[in-house]
Image (tube, rainbow, N blue to C red):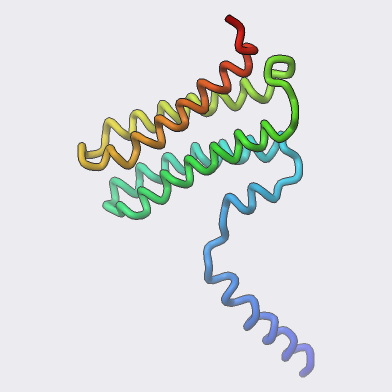
Length: 148
């Protein structure tokens, strides 16, 4: 009987926690290894661009906009993670170049999405695409060592 009460008590306590969707960026941020963390953030951003497209096509405009914000936050998390390693992108470009390529792909996907949405909805995509493009260009300049 006591075991059943403990099990029931545990289920009651965990039920509210399971009803709220988990924050995917918090889960990614919890990854200990920065090399895995930045890549998971970029993978999530890529998948979220596809989700944003699906939400737009389904007519869920609020979810479409929140997906776009998640894309931007994911790429920013990736950039922050790489820069927090303290490695010089010009001397150790492996992960920086890999991230730069993926960010460039995400920017291309966002440009395609921007072209497919209605004109009045492009204002939701454009600033995010431009911010990520600037971030990607900065990463390129860091990789080449800001040579002149």
